[in-house]
Image (cartoon, rainbow, N blue to C red; front, side):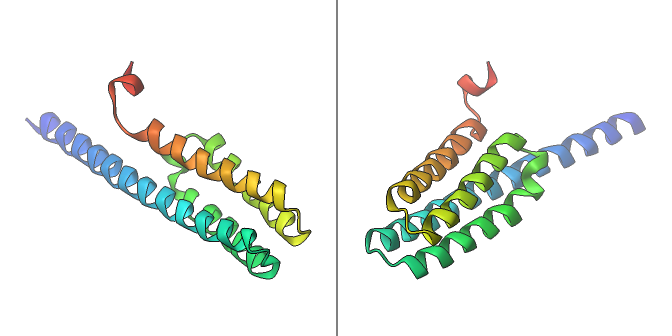
Length: 126
């Protein structure tokens, strides 16, 4: 009986961690998409100072938020987002609009792909 209760407790802890991590991951991806949309509008207006500031904030947010989730998701996904955010900050600093916009779109696509991969479905299971 004691082993059954211990196993059940461990299972419930694991299930709680998965549910919490999944909800947190979806929220983080949505915030990153919102920040990218604001940054994209700033770039389209050619507001380079604001764009640089926003891109640095985006990079810092990605670094802070994906560190605890590295247990739950693939490290390469988080590293890709951090690398693109670094590139984006440099493109904004040196006023390279086309490269900056392409980095924004890659970040948006990557967050969309991360959300799709982490959402439980038949495709993800088999």
